[in-house]
Amino acid sequence: MKRSIWAVLSLLLAISMMLTACGQATPTEAPQAQEPTTAADAPAVPTEAAAEVTPIKIGTSLPLTGEFSITGTLHRNGYQLCVDLINDGGGLLDRPVELIVSDNQSDVDTTLAQFERFINVEKVDLIFGTFSSKLTFPATSITEKAGYLHPIPSAAALRVYERGFEYLVYFQPNAAEYIGASPVMMIKDLVPADQQPKTIALAWADDFYANALIAGLVGDDVTFQNDDGSEKTVSLAPGELSKLGAEIVFKQQWPEGFTDWTTLAASIKAANADYLFAPVTSADEAIQLIRALKTVGYQPKGIFMSQGAQKEFGETLGADANGVVIQASWHPLANFSGVLNGQEFTNQMFLDAYKEQYGTNPGEDEAIPFALCQGIEQAVRATGSTDNKVIHEWLTARTADNPVKTILGDFYWDERGLPINKSFIMTQWQDGKLEFVYPTGAFPGVKPLIYPMQ
Image (cartoon, rainbow, N blue to C red; front, side, top):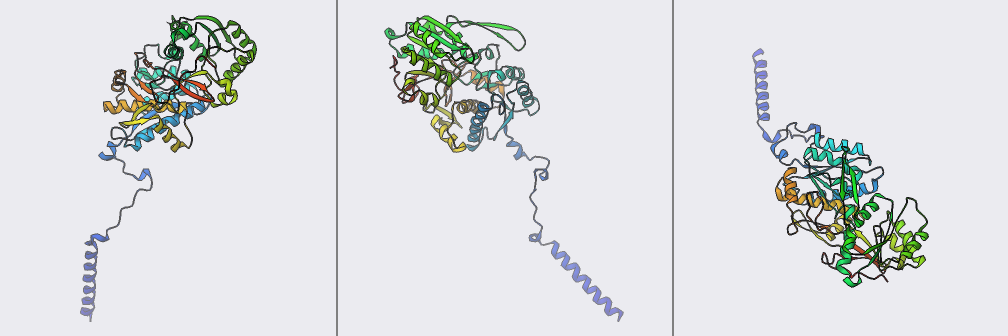
């Protein structure tokens, strides 16, 4: 009996061992590996493939809150659209591009801390500039010391570019002190010599931007204080107006909060100048001055203003706006042909892409940073490098025949980082529309300048 029991137990044990061996030998029954549920579950050591797609990091400190928040937010949108389009096109140098945006709260100290962090902690590959001369002036000292290229979208103060810095490039037509060159060039190129103004009136706001524009027109000496306390004087003599050979018969500055527009207009009329240059700080000031000039019956041959391109200006003044000329860096109808991702990318393509991404039409404050991004993308692609020195050398080697091509037109720069032979777009109100009148050969659809005003 004992033998029978042991025989049965031995048989059962043998069968169990056979089944276990068969289960271990079946590959199709192996358990499936589970995907990590969080980034922390991923392997700690990156693979070679992952290392090859490390993004190109671009740092930018922008005023998303505070005094400059409206413009800073629009600048961010322009930058982001450009980066998104680059990534949609396959990235840059076979790598995705990552835009790191920090809010500097329109504060200088915060801006400086963020630029320091970008360079020394996050070790970004590239820097995109911020908005305003107030923030840009000290920030460029940090990037210059670190050897980082500093492309600038919006800092008009000449003092930013007069310190002998090597790594600056400005993506607007020129500094504020040189804006007056554009209307003067327009007059000389479009108005017959015997009809050009012989007398000039100057009336302007007591404002940094307006004062700088006037200084360039009349040829003042301008003294700047650098961040180290040293001073430098730049002579703007003989001034842009000297190219017209006209006599300045009226000069008056109005203070902040000025309201006595009719008295000012009467004084301008008494001088009876052929042409009025009137740098203002806002569209509201422009409207008030034009209304006052119409009230007193002053009809010069031409008026240039630094504000007035806004639709509110034309809608408020109606026919009284006709003939007024305003400068601009960009306009939706100026279909300049740029380059992005190695292919043509026009202003119209920018308009379409922006509307698709953000659901609204862009303005100048989105177009300028987009153009900056275009320029740096071209430099990185051409050099095959994100080395800031290499990129800078390529940019400074650009010429009129081989420029950077953007939706703001062509760019190449002098040793200060200011564009060479770059005119602002000149626009003129004509029958309720802000039309392009200069430069005439830059794009189709330029309208003839109305001169004298009607």
